[in-house]
Image (cartoon, rainbow, N blue to C red):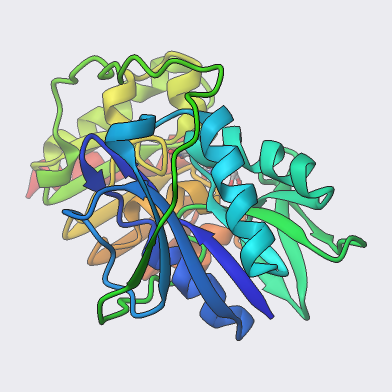
Length: 304
Ligand code: FAD
């Protein structure tokens, strides 16, 4: 099997996600080639063949043009699969490339089981196994799902000609509003999940974090409900944290959340469901109602 890996480049930097694409390819036992719109100054540590299009000539984000260049590389390499990161770049390009190849497209792959793709459904509550009937497949891979492979060596670079400008004009990136809290530096984080039930209960999570000398964070549904501001969100679309202690309260442990906190030294999860996926990464699982457990723990800590 051969996989064409699509690396990403942003603001003059090669994004590290390509090492997860390499991890996926290794998992599949596949040979690889790589494509990136980037620059000679930021090449991946990858010993294989790299198709390089000049970002200065075609724009870092220009789906129309990038699609055409990828299809040209596909015609040359004839890969069985094209793999993107499940990022805004991948979301935009993968379906366009799949349509151009007349190939099946599978989004947000989190695992490969007996050659079939496993993807989350129903807001990650369930998983579905997908087998494609087309000869070629295009996939996007969920961040954190595949162990990164730190490849070495220098790529054999083949420059890709940039032909035309496509129909999209790339104007630049807009920075998200800077947040006040930098969770990446916190040694203790107490995070609130949907299990807290309502906005008023954020207070008890914040109180426990304060008693422990740490910060409080949240899962995405809590942020989406506007109970907590976005700069406290942990996960693939929030912050990546690595505290000494991570206390997950009412958090199920979806892969997008785990990707943001799996480097924590010690994980305690409080959940009414003993089989919640968070139990797989937790050092200690407290099977309890957080509405009773959290205030009781805060009281004990405050009394120390
Ligand atoms: P749920 O999955 O609903 O879990 C709630 C948990 O609380 C359950 O395990 C339940 O048993 C428990 N519970 C309920 N009541 C109590 C109680 N009284 N006491 C104790 N436990 C209780 N999610 C993120 O967190 N961060 C991200 O950055 C992120 N990015 C995403 C990006 C994409 C592209 C997508 C598709 C999804 C993303 N998600 C992200 C969402 C993610 O898939 C999950 O939906 C989300 O993490 C679930 O949040 P949760 O665990 O708080 O809620």
